[in-house]
Image (cartoon, rainbow, N blue to C red):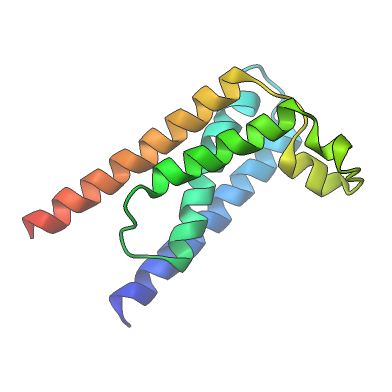
Length: 129
């Protein structure tokens, strides 16, 4: 099996696992830390693994692009984009969200820092080979 295919499979499995964790947190965790902040931290990591499923090779600045996207979505929450667009679909309303919080942006930053550190570690490992 080619290395690229193996990487894709790993990222797909991680994406599915992280999605399952996100669903679990959304349905069963009702606290003041894990649900609001842990979920937001994990969601950008989930986006990272999803993108890497399609682009398994190193993609410079991917973590930065995901952070910018997450902040953009958070800003759309600030202006209540789901109400402006009249979105009625429950799942889509949940995915986009409807409450702006600076702390969500901090959680996104933490998640993107984690993926950036991961990229750096992988880069150093491959460089050392």
